Length: 326
Image 1 (cartoon, one colour):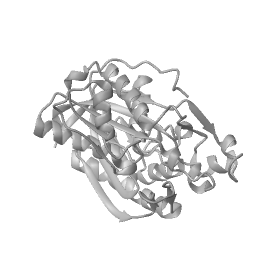
Image 2: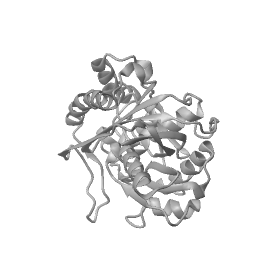
Image 3: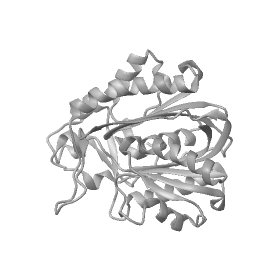
Image 4: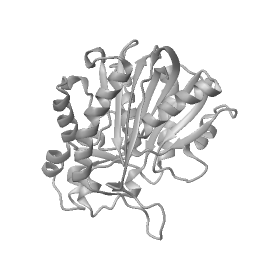
């Protein structure tokens, strides 16, 4: 599959920041307990005026500005989410209306949980190749706070809300090298129906074992498929689930830790929004330069995994967003 160039990326975080100390007033936990086990110090929860869709629209608008791409140039929209405000119309359809995007383009949502954004990128690449179009808009957005049981300290301390968006264009000179897969398991689950609102549940030990096994394998498999070595990659963009998982994977890969950009301390686990939030933050901080090669890896509920490579293209230089900066 032909590759994609990242032309611009942006993020949007809710206005309500929730620290570990604040959570300790609701559930039996402490800042030290959470940081030691997860590396998380805070996360963001939506207010009544905010939702996954409003955050998605904010991130998408900023990504278009960062890329210099006009709304009418977008050839497809793919949104990754498990917590949209509606079952239908999809988040992608809502964004088409909110952003004034062309009507004659494919728009759809995907749900592969924390791997969802990368599933969306691969889907967008296929849509551009089969349906035509100059650019793709891919968004990851979640409002996980509405799915949390605030009495369950094994989950409520982990997750946060947020959105990230990226604009891509086809790159025939590179390979996307997608590696996608699933091991059917309910180690992380949330019921979709019933009189009681859905709540996220997780077998933490099973997820940890899965992640420290799968992430290094996925990194190596993606590099092999792309005919690259880790030395030829400028950044590894990995789903932010748990700092201990990332540390184990870096050690197992015998990789330089500085290549693995992390922000989990400030955002928590935002599922499908995690990777595009990272990209948006790095774009804003000027850490992504034209020509750089990125290796992206996601893993999560399903249990799913995804890996692919990207090149950074020539979008507009990002400016730090003071409202969402840590």
